[in-house]
Image 1: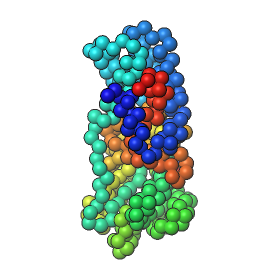
Image 2: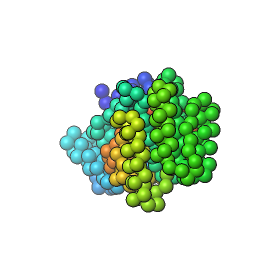
Image 3: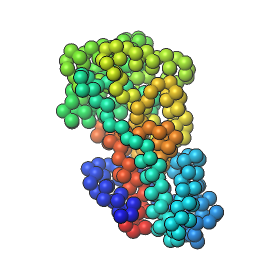
Image 4: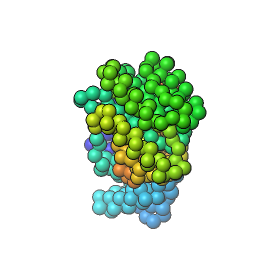
Length: 325
Ligand SMILES: Nc1nc2c(ncn2[C@@H]2O[C@H](COP(=O)(O)OP(=O)(O)OP(=O)(O)O)[C@@H](O)[C@H]2O)c(=O)[nH]1
Ligand SMILES: [Mg+2]
């Protein structure tokens, strides 16, 4: 079975398909359009075609290094397998994108079997940590898990209130500290609350300041140390929230967090607000981390588990339907 049919089949069984299609609409339109434009003057896999393909990938924010890998792979495959027609080449392109993602192994959710599972949300200012914390909490609630929120962003005025409002709407306990107080103390309180109340999940919303790497490192280290003292193995997950609209810049910011703490997964937000959905492939290739969830809109229900097949289908639908499955 070719990749188009595989993606179509996998997509058909994904319950989030409508959300994926509308959330990736901007990316889909621009990516498919660019690839279709390549078909117009197509006369085989030559230098000119590969250059245009490179540009199309860069415009989708796949990033130079990753785009070059894909272009080289398409060139080699085309030669080895004697691919001639444009639909063969576009199929090969999508195959290579899928391969870059699936080359890395996925890791299941590190649920703590002996008590509360602690998740820390980290990331730069405005990337979507607080809203994503609320969206995640709702998903866990829907899975019959009890959730405690920890407002560990004591840095920004209003941050605690923002999370507390979400907690109220979702009818969840929200552990707060003083403004400008110690975020680690809030996390300790939240862990103790969770142990006392036999809660399943603690989600810690942290501040996004990045101006000083040494401070960030110190603060994150302390947070991890104190939660590990309260609950063995905690934090079980550290999810780095990246705003898809910040593109390659988002990736370099992500690297700073990765240098300072053990990030276990990426949550990519605001994919609905960008035409550059290719960033998922670059994240996976450059950072090697799985994308755990994807933000496909502003609404509380617009966070979905990341599914590479649904994502690629959403991104490439225009080409797939053109190329014929
Ligand atoms: N369209 C869209 N907007 C989103 C998404 N996720 C978050 N946002 C918006 O992004 C803005 C910033 O989100 P916050 O959750 O406050 O970001 P933050 O990382 O907590 O910000 P700081 O606390 O300042 O570091 C809000 O207006 C959110 O509604 C998404 O998937 N799609
Ligand atoms: Mg916040």
